Length: 490
Image 1: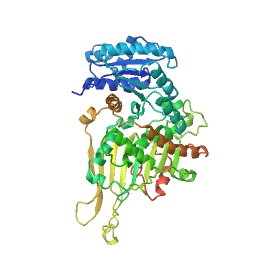
Image 2: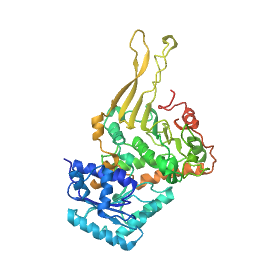
Image 3: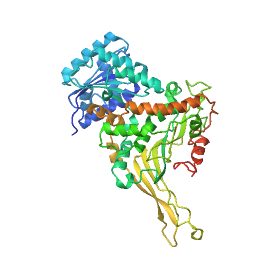
């Protein structure tokens, strides 16, 4: 049985899609596993007017349970609701009173987690009123969880952070990135720092390049209004991809603690080369999907302007100016309406300096590069591509794969990202959350790309649904005499 955690959760945006799809089911998983038992409470808030029982009905629906499920009913009984206007200073006293009632009823020791699933423009307002109206005046801990987007550029992100910092210390702020809650993302550290075989080769002397691909099969769907003001660069690169890259590029931390891990990630991001105009134009490409068989072009999607130049695809080359990675590029790509939905990291090692098997008289194909692939989703596992002799007469070589995939039983028991991250918030462990320094360096890099793109007129649309993006993404890597490990029509 897991150690019990004690806390009151106050969800701002508590009737939103995220809460019902991810947060409440994740909390229920924690309840079934024993992390939450008797000493927890949930106060949901939004502008919608609901009674406690109406709110609980919605929570039941999100869990897929009925009133006959005794465990679920006991869990749901800890939920209450209060309609709330986040801009109404006086109404925070109502929240305070209900919070104190729940604290007393469930013996929560004043521990409070404020989850802000709201538009970023309200972050500072809510944080300020939580402080001035006394909701943080308890003997327990106070922590605030922030959903993305954390700004749309460095300046707006800094304004948000400054507003939050007036009410909460950095160690109290948890900027959530659900990718950091994925099992295989956390395995990056285990593979690197738990294996001498890997870490001793994890540098520019042995690694030729590293590729990170986040591929989405669907389009913008109901998120068009948000997405057209964001795009793949802001929506995926600035947060998810930059976090993955920092884990791949960081040095070994002094200890496996959130403070030391974050410190090394920041060092890595500090060494990331911020491109000038010419470099940005050369090393980053963008795309927008056109029409497919039964698929509308992006510009024909609902709530998308017909002349939109928003990017639904990004590919780029990142360079780190430090001793470990100098000269070794990190290639990234992400987009919507691609061939399939998956996330993977491909670490391509350098080939032997001399290929003794490829002399003409041997009629042997050149050796292929060794590749370590980390499959993040939908299937979790690893693959290591090696060269071996073919079975039979003569001496020919061929690539073989050593594969490991998490089996169905273990996969089913793997915590969902939000389940893991909510647990970490209760523990006060910030390892899998973005620090302000990480966010700031990521924005500085991304802002430069965005500024260059804003000066250029793209030729959109430039890729077909079901492909792996525009031809320029392949040209980007081929220019360096390399190719994507995962590609269609190999």
